[in-house]
Length: 399
Image (cartoon, rainbow, N blue to C red; front, top):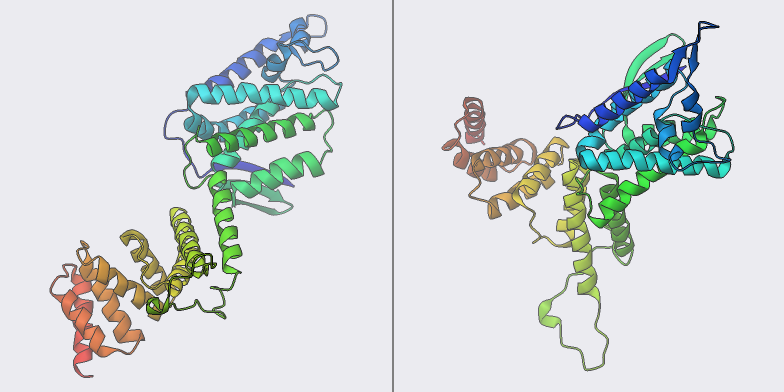
């Protein structure tokens, strides 16, 4: 069985010169490693290679870097450089040339340390440094898709797998924890490299040293934490998912100021906290274009407080999502809210057309349908939409 990643869905915005330079340096060193033995007429390693390999028993400081530019065979360097080319370009683009070079060299050092802690055998190869690069890719682009070629008996095809799962399960867990059948492979160096690359990127994103994108692993962790906090708050007397315990309606006129020293009922504070978490959750879902989840959170939000208003782009996208999901009544409410607060929208006639069609075709409210369709017909410029609007109005004349 063969499983091989062949491309990613992310393309560097700028040419990753540092990544190309590292590949060229590795190839150049590999070519200089060997010479033709005059006695055997076979390729043999030069004497200086042994001094640049990492020897855990008596390591020299330079070996923690030099070992990462040596390779033992054609297959060894081809495999390593392929993975460096596949994942390194995007990391180079994100970190910049100096930052990427520092990541690569530091990954080599940390991988060497990981190997020397558990093994006494000499090691060479760039796989530890490349593991750090792949670990960084996992954090920076966890939701990107990796096209994977597989060959299983007579089945040959490709499949797209999110980077979070392919790298996390296949490259890290399966190849370096479960399956350790290949001899002379420094698995501990690989794991140390992955750990360094992941930890370094998470720390940089968490501290703001590296700007997040909303799609990186740190953003996913923060979103998960927001949802966890919301579930904890929602569990305290209100369940928006089932609606079994509706939010309490507070009559402001009946609220009196408590006597001095008397504890204040925390209902308002809890409600505001739920609203804040829901709005934060919607923003995170919209940034990842998870419209279905955003629509669910929006419905929970307006059930909790019908006066809550989202930004126009969010509200319109959610209304469209509800329409596509055949939740016509909820979609109509969202469109009505949009019309009430964003009546100066550039394409307001299209919103009126959609709302008129919902009332006419699905909700059985012809009077409301005529109102919105009549408002739209005088503004529509698209011939197809205009014909649709007029045809619908004509049908309603007989009702």
